[in-house]
Image 1: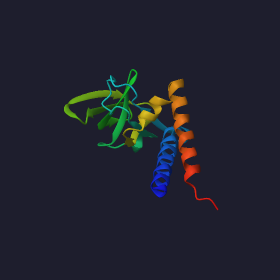
Image 2: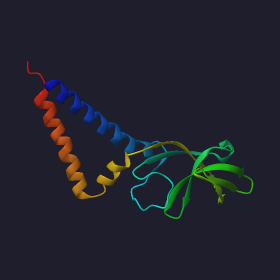
Image 3: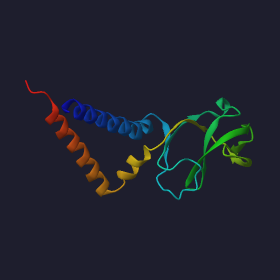
Image 4: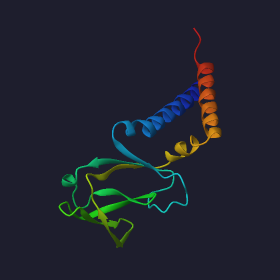
Length: 154
């Protein structure tokens, strides 16, 4: 039983550590991060997901690339259909509705999507409030105590 509790404790600590790294480190590396943290969002990205996009030179973007497009306060995933760098315009389509296409303006970079990780946004939602931070700190503290109790004594 002690081994099972120890394994689950270590697993939970690793999952929390990896989630924290995925939420806070990419921004420091110049990777654009979008977390969908409201269920009524007009985005086509899944709720509580984190999407990571690399700011790419427009000349390195190709037809078929998945990119992030900002429309007001919302980000959405679109597929690049056409890109005219000289005019600074492009055409994108919704990957979930082939009939839905939009014209976009292209500035100095195009945000190409690297990966979308589901469910990691719940951690971002939790740390938005003071109560959430206290709850998360309590969970980490409880996991630490559990780890210390299940260690073998010499």
